Amino acid sequence: QSLLTQPPSASGTPGQRVTLSCSGSSSNLGIYTVNWYQQLPRTAPKLLIYDDSERPSGVPDRFSASKSGTSASLAISGLRSDDEADYYCASWDINLQGPVFGGGTRLTVL
Amino acid sequence: QVQLQESGPGLVQPSETPSLTCTVSGGSMTTYDWSWIRQPPGKGLEWLAYLYSRGNTHYNPSLRSRVSISIDTPNNQFSLKLTSVTAADTAMYYCVRVIRGPWRLDSWGPGTFVTVSS
Image 1 (cartoon, helix red, strand yellow):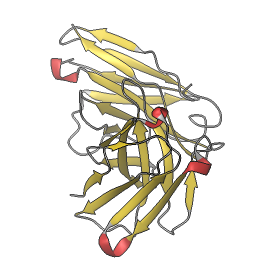
Image 2 (image 1 turned 135 degrees about the horizontal axis):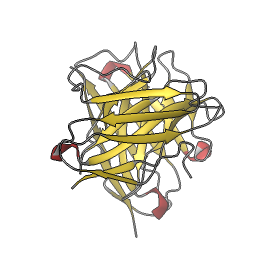
Image 3 (image 1 turned 180 degrees about the horizontal axis):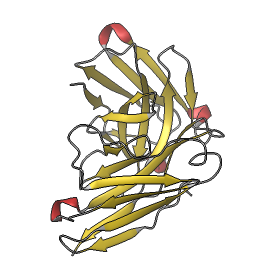
C-alpha cells in the first residue's frame, strides 16, 4: 500500500481542465515538497512538477500544481489527447528516509 | 543533457542474484545523488535504493537485506544487486538521477525489465 494516496483513475474531454489529487501525512507531504511525474504508455516517468509547483524547462504552463498541508493537487488545463498517461505524486518520507510515491492516477482523455 | 541507460540480465532464475548497471553520460556523477526505482507490471513505482553524493547509501526497509547499491565513478556507472529473487521481483527497473535543493528525481533511464522465472 502506497504512503501517498491517489485516485486510481480520472477522465476529461479535450479542452477541459482536470485536477488530480494526492494525499499524504505529516511524515511526508506535511514536511517535504511534492513532485509530480507523468508516465506515458510504455515509457519511463518524466518529471512534470517539483518543489510543489515548479515546472522544469519544457513543461507547458497547462500543467500547474499546489500543496496545502498534507494534500497536493495537479491541474491540467486545455486537456489534450496526448495528456493521456499515468500521473504519480512523490515526496520524501522522514520515516522511510527515502522517496515515497502515490499509487498513480490513470488519466483518460475521452 | 544527462542520459541514463540501464542494462541487466533480462531473465533470471528464482534465488539468483542479478546485477543491474546504469551508465551515465553527459554529466558528472559526483555532485548528484542516484537511485533505483522499480515498477512491477501494471503497478506503481517503488523506491529501492539511494546513493548519496558523499557515498553513503540507504535502502527501502522492505528490501534492505536483499539489495545493495554501488558506484563506479571512473566508468560513470552505478549498480544495483538484488539477492534471492522471486517472481515478485519481476519488474521494470529504472535508474534515476536525484537533485537536492529542492529534491526531485529529475532524469530517468528508459528502464530494463527483469523477469524472474524458472
